[in-house]
Length: 259
Image 1 (cartoon, rainbow, N blue to C red):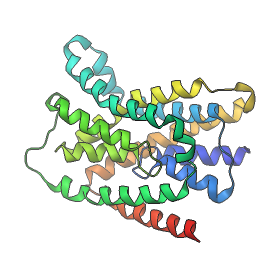
Image 2: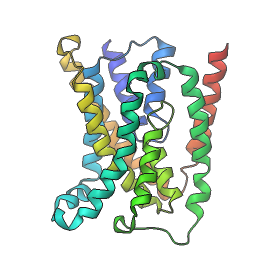
Image 3: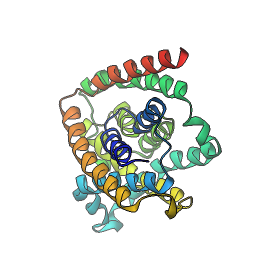
């Protein structure tokens, strides 16, 4: 890949990894439309490390608190563990078909439409004010598993991991603030697991280390500010706006693909 292509992918990854629009869907679309070759595994791994760094920095207080006197927080660790299981299981099941899944622009378009409908429904979920769950300690194991299944749903390109898990939390009557926090607590083991799997396929000789490290920093920098943007959107109860964007993009992709 050229320098311009690498930087473009880093910016897109950082921006769309956390906004509820699907980073994988956008990367597939870019590669198809502009003839960008599939990034080397190591490059993709570094981009994920960059966005992981953004999560750790943005939620540093909440994450550090989990390790502070961790024995008293076994319930929270259990919630994160069980919430991670669905994505891990479905990831292993879909692994042999992942190349086919990520090569289908028609599937991306269809998933964008499905996801857009889910996002539109968040307006009603957020507006429901009674009985909101406000604290991590109030989350039940069943809530964690539901959110975890929505994280597994995001294995398909066109489905945003952050948007899907936030929707899962809102559907369990989490407050927007709690839905955001739990979504990204679940993202940490998910990203680390994906990075570990990718590292097994790495061939260091296939990339430019300097460009890749620069791209990682850019992905992390852009990702941090996209997290701030997502938080403001949730606080203003405007998450459903992204549903219109996903519906529009999905329809355009399907029309383009059917020509």
